[in-house]
Every structure is written in C-alpha cells, then in structure tokens.
Image (cartoon, rainbow, N blue to C red; front, side):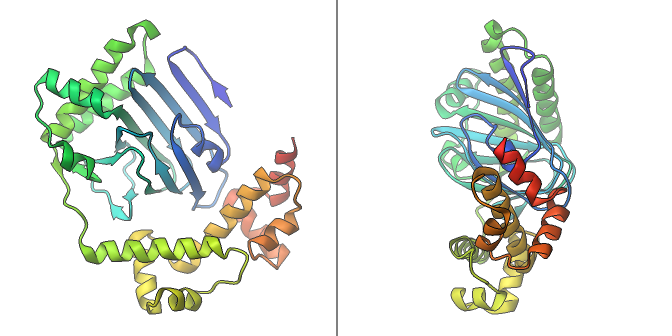
Length: 312
C-alpha cells in the first residue's frame, strides 16, 4: 500500500515483514517476525541529495538483517523506549546506532517499535562537518556500532527529523531540508562518546550464533536439534543457550522455530506454484496441523491465506 502526498516524501505501508523490509530505498534487508500477531509496517522516507531520512514503525518484534548503500553512514535513533540490539549488543537509552554502508548488520527490535534513520553519503557528511566547524574522528566513527549522545542533542535531532518528515516542503527546497537534517545530526555525533569495540568474549558468542544460523538455514529441510547444533559447533548445550540468550535474547529452540516459520512464509509468498504441504515439508514441518497452528499463532492467519495472496 503506497501513499505519496508530495513528490519529496514517500509513505509506504505493508502487512508482511519481508515486504516491509524491501520498501526502504537502496537497502538490502531481510526481516523475520519474532512476536505473535498480525504485522503492520509503516515507512516514511525522504530522499535528499546524497542523503536519506526516514521513520520506520513495526507492530511486531523483528530480527532484521540490514545493509546500507555503499560509501554511506547510517545513524539510527530508536524512538521507542523498548530495548534494541545491534549485532547482539543491548542499546542503552540516548544511544545512536551507527553502521557504514556495504556492511551487513543485525537488529533485534521489539513489538510496537519506531526508529528514525539518517543515511548520508560520507563525502556529503564530511563536507558539512567541515563547513559547520566540526572535527570528527571518521575512522573511529566508521568502525562504531553505538554512540552515547547527549540526551538534549538527541531529543533535538528527533524533533527536527519528525518535523521534516511531517512537513518536508517543496522538492525545490531539498537543499535547505538537507542542511536542517545535517545541522541536527552533526552536534549529536560530535559531542557523543563512541562505544568501545566489543570484548573478544562477546565477539565469540556472536560468531557461535552466526554459525548456528548459517547451519540451520543450510539444513532447513532436516530435523536439526540443539544437541546437533552443539556437536556441529563444538560447544556445550549450556554455552549455546547462553550465546543465544545474550546475543538474540531468545533460546535456541525458540529461534529455530521462528527461523523455520519465517522461511516457510517467505517461500509461500514467493513460490505460488508450490503447495502448503510441500513448503512445510521443505522446512521440516511434518505434522501439518501443528505447522498450521504454529503459523497462525505467529503471523495471525493461516499458511493457506499467504498461499492464496501469492496467487493474486
């Protein structure tokens, strides 16, 4: 569902998490729904010269795999009070999320969530910083995941971005709109404290979870159990449980179920020629009634409904 009230502002609604993931211009994304209920996503996006400003709202919890366009920096400002995780790290209040372009990262977000985002070409940002008199540690910023910002500067930035999305002005004034966004962003990151890199112990837990996910996706048609994962990854059950809870905030068994259900839904929506039973079996759901029940609980409707939608 698309709404375009002006040529500058783009507003898109979606009733499917993966469809919503594809709505953000020039991003590569894949979303898995993690909480139960019907999904609704809203994206408000403003395209500016060398820059993108947006507000994204999602009704359900998400595991998001994201990648921003090259030669850019992304800054994320969660508006919701609930906790966010970036690459497994819990995000403290007043933090700004940071990631460079062409670099995949992961977000774990709760239900009823809103985040403001700014993506800006590095040359555009550096030129603005020089023009406005800010001296940045660009190398450290490009390697950062979190910047702890002044609450006042962060609140001012949120207010400015909200106002720009509410009233973007005429497309001919895009330069002035961009200057307003940059003037709100630069003080935020200039006075903020760049979070140190993660400790090696946490980085190891991240690697274990990533290897487990890759193995599960590669063997999604097989009956993979927690002991199987432990054997493949050479870790104890307790270690695997701790890694998943620390990085994703959920147990391995819960994640396995969510991953398989989201994979099945993706196939149902993108492979209309296949039957529901075939897709269920391909994701190792052999008890069809249980699959239908679990599917309905997570997504708010039956798998056959998604299959019918794909045919139309």
